[in-house]
Image (cartoon, rainbow, N blue to C red; front, side, top):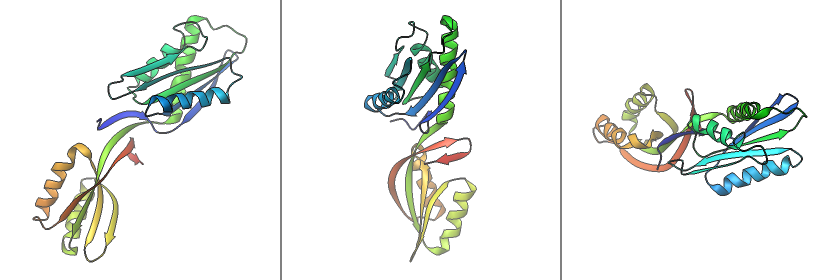
Amino acid sequence: MLYNYKTVYEYGYKEVEIKRSRFIGHAKPVLNEDEAMEFINTIKRTHRDATHNVYAYILGEGDEVQRYSDDGEPSGTAGVPVLNVIKNEGLKNTAVVVTRYFGGILLGAGGLIRAYVKSAKLGLEAATIVEKILFKSVHITVDYTLFGTVQNYLLKNNYLIKDIEYADKVTLTVYVQYDKKDDFIEHIVNLTNAKSFIEDGRDVYLYKKGDRYLE
């Protein structure tokens, strides 16, 4: 299981015109080949009148699955360059489709490669490149006398407090990076002199862009 990796946040697309040809870069996060092919086929149906719908995708913890298609463009000028853009960005579980509407001017091999690289990058930027990080939600229940101590520690150390429930005692739900969970729990136990009840919650992936976390 990967604790963190780079991918894209959502579907995005961007269009650019290069020597009268329209290029549209599309990108989307995908978890398996079925999702990748569904995305690719959706773009192909939407742009069925396009000259080419070139695609590439990478899947797996170790990038085990790498597929591409030139879709009629000269070999090596379209699919491979798009695949290399994904690889060079260090992205996993990502699919890209570049749609081309031919404008009547031949670009040559070098021009095609540059056009497909540019379009793929624009599509990835539109889809928002993020870091996907695995967190564990941890529920901490304490008496009100300890609530301030625990909350201050969490805020001071930039932990993500998802929820606070006030009842006979206070329960804080905190997102903790999965591989740091054990150290975190040990610290809370010490901080509260073992006067806290700590329970694991669900696993959740969050997306980090800059200093912001997105669900």
